[in-house]
Image (cartoon, rainbow, N blue to C red; front, top):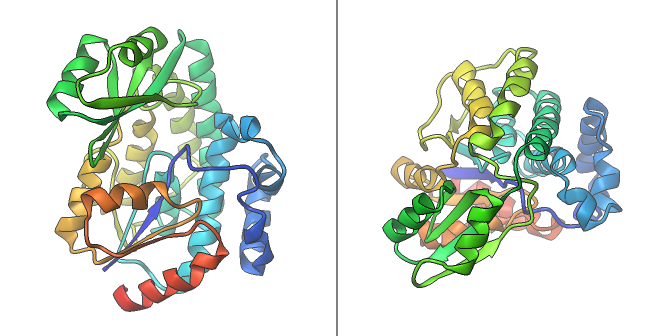
Amino acid sequence: MIAVLCPGQGAQTPGMLTPWLEIDAVAESLAALSEATAVDLIAHGTTSDADTIRDTAIAQPLLVATALATGRAVLGDVTPGLVAGHSVGELGAAALAGVMTDAEAVRLVTVRGNAMAEAAASAEPTSMAAVLGGVEEDVLARLTDLGLTPANMNGGGQIVAAGAKAGIDALLADAPARTRVIELQVAGAFHTSYMEPAVAALEAAATAITPATPTATLLSNADGEAVADGTDALTRIVRQVANPVRWDLCQARMLEAGVTGIIEVAPGGVLTGLAKRSLKGIPAVALKSPDDLDAARELLKEHA
């Protein structure tokens, strides 16, 4: 069984769309998705600098549109066995699973990005930091002591902490034993209660979508479970902005489901990196450039 994974925020780099625009189908898809939202996705994916595409309101639609355009390019008419997305990648995954259209996904994620940016701007100074290594129980205890949330439980010895900037600073200054802590360049404490103000805006935007039943096994970040109902999938995506991402449980579910191959759509690399530690031995291809398409299609042919 092939699993198609959609990456979350943090994977984008300046000019990442430039080589992909040489593929007509990808260029046409990105042009159509740009029309579906107020964001010039092609311009931001080719000429905007790192600071610009780091802006949550731009980064999120750019990531989802890139995932969808490249995902369609590699899948063609093939329906994957399983689809999952990390954080904002859930919207791309939902569209690839048929819960919503690609245009609906980019419109919804544009609302999401703006609402989360506004929530971050209106809150006290907040931040996020990746905690690598250590003993999980010790790391979680330290986060609790500092009033921080394990916003991303990524598996493979990686936990992303989020909360007040003062708490993140204290974590950086006094990290748990045998860990390395890296502060992330983000607008605020995503997937925590600080994002609760964004939920109402996303709920309102979601009413414009009539979700369909997933055509592939679709995993939820909330608990790693397969979501069989389109309305439930959409509700979970809305609520997830203010709740932790349990990618560790998603990966465990992939093993239970019998996944034998992994394709991470562009801008790929982060999720396949995590899979190397948590899903050892399962062949994976990350779409980092069009040069990876042949390998991804071959893997799809072998494992679909």
